[in-house]
Image (cartoon, rainbow, N blue to C red):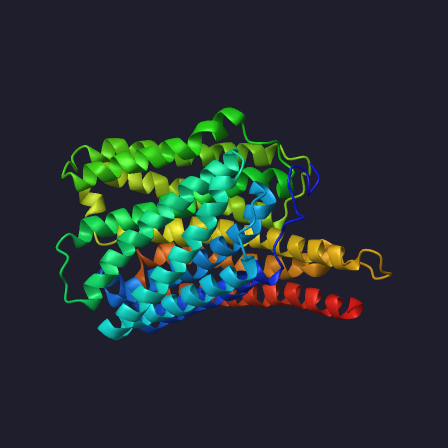
Length: 428
């Protein structure tokens, strides 16, 4: 499979439309590491602590949100053939609202400031509304396909996540009017992590795993029903939770967990069948992330049927670290190391057609040695973060390793963008 097979790059947006999201994302993760270092083991006292809420949103809105929205701006024209209208202006506006809103939200939690929370509500509400409207309009016009369907369901999940999040955040801005905080928070987490992050990763993987890892294509029987079934099961679980039928929720909630586990198992099997047997950084990130996903799903399933475990203090922190730091950050990090060099190569190739200039290859754009150094730090940081939920003093080396890993990721992405800028100057 060639890099371009089945894809359309003629409508790809200018490189800075997705790149500004990619370049900003690791900085939010560095801020999250700083929050962990500042608060130390005390952050494990309660999931409702301001430091925990700030940390969670710096990771989910800041790191994951930035990278996934940047990927959507790039992939909608390439995979779905329907670019976002005025991509440069809309991407810049969404980026500005999201970056400022995330910083205001984290600061509002840490400083217990209702004013900052209200500012965050406005900024994030406008940013997400613009993104959902622009992306939704493109996806409605897109030709049907497995990746497009997954993106459509993921975007609906994002809209539900944002709606729930705005309701919850308003509690901090207007005097604690909401009585159902715990139930709404659990729904917010499920739709954000499993719905938005999980379904988008699944949809994107249908393209990037065969394309960049040289594996066979995902089975059509799986891609035809997986995203829709997972979305429907999440909706059924949510209705049970809202209807006060929590006793039945674990049985329904187990089904999407099995669906995500099936996706992880099939992806790992396809990777074993890849044509190029040498393991690269992206492949190792994916394997690490999928292993963490399977651990998180196992822990979640056990917790659903053993209340003594899920009601414990450690459970939500360990589950969150496995899913967010272990799975989501790892897979996104791995995808960045393929998407970013490829975008630089593609845009330089377009600019240098008809010139004597030589387009740098992918390894020159982002050397393997740089990526492996950062990967090693992440592979140390993620287990340390999970272990720190059981041995709280480990949070200090865990936060240092994670912050250093994200700083290295930032410098690596800047290196790749620097290659682009230098070569543009050569032909301008």
